[in-house]
Amino acid sequence: MDWTRSNDDLFVRLDPGEEIHTSLRELADELKINAAAITSGIGRTRDNVYGHMSDEGIYHKVSLSEASELVSLQGNIGRLNDGSSFTHIHMTISDDEMGVHAGHLFEATVHVVAEIHIRIMENVIMSRCPAEDSQFVALVFE
Image 1 (cartoon, rainbow, N blue to C red):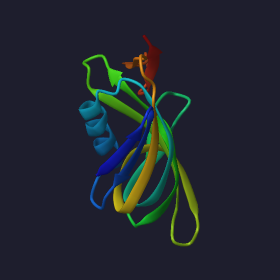
Image 2: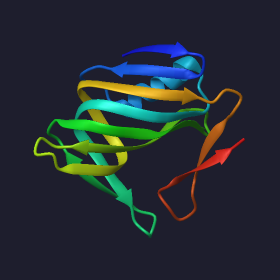
Image 3: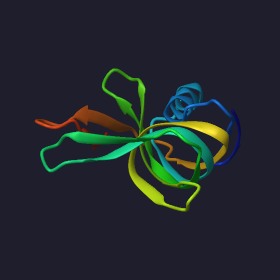
């Protein structure tokens, strides 16, 4: 991983073998980021696990292990009640036949590169708390 910062804008390059959530959480801890918007991301990933939440509050996962183009990445970074960093990310990927897959990102490993823009929200704390009767972890502003 490498990154550069200009004021509240952070641009991150993730390298082959790095997992997106893990890498961004480690960076958030290193830089003491309590609130940020992940505004864009492109690259090529593999071992993608993505999905959606049902009306009953249950996440349904789909796996796509082969390498795919990372077309779009967006979400946010906050903190859990225990102080650990938390990433909530959605992604759009395309397979080599140009079939599009999209949804909530559970995990993805960088295959070639991931280039991600993050906008840091100074003086803001975004917390995440488990929602009642759901697997969702709700966003709370402090």
